[in-house]
Image 1 (cartoon, rainbow, N blue to C red):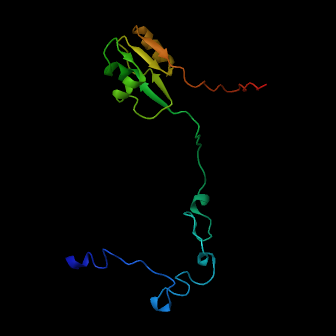
Image 2 (cartoon, rainbow, N blue to C red):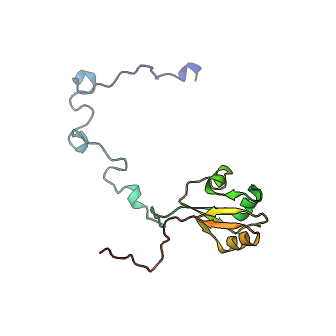
Length: 163
């Protein structure tokens, strides 16, 4: 092997394959499509998952788990992280948490969890709070403000009929 072998066969300006231009071209008559069959027909192209008529892999593998495309994504922040990141008397909002990289991901709602200690008096605004988080915030002399989000779905309740 030589260094000159690396680019052998690579052309900067490769000519387009012209099919159906006579038998002398090597791509005449059937234009490289063979005889008959669906691949020989005009306008036919295989789907990306097409495997020559065999059952596609995506259909052979069993489905597992559950996926709800309409589920709300909830970002969680622990009280311990909030306590470390902010000084006493700060208004902790969604925007402020985002600037401190505590609730960076895309989410529909923000929930504050009670993991860690709360020693500072803070005013925290979020969609949801755990019971332990609420107790710790109030014990430290802070305030928990609930942002109204989408109405929570209650199991067993039926929607009111329109009249």
